Image (tube, rainbow, N blue to C red; front, side):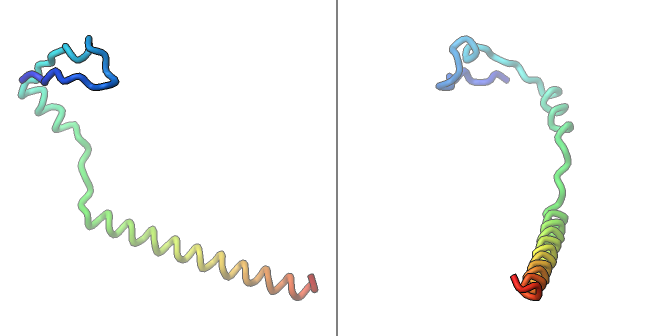
Length: 77
């Protein structure tokens, strides 16, 4: 199978003239080398875990900020 020789605006014409033969065997090899995709369930679970951890860190930062503020007020600054 030959690729079409359509020129790209940023591509020189000498590369556009090149025709590449891709056999069925080569195509099968490249398809098997693709990394496996994680199911969307795993992605959703990891996203939920990330959000929960992020919210927990925000809570800790807010509590630490309140504590620092109260210590500052106790010192009279």
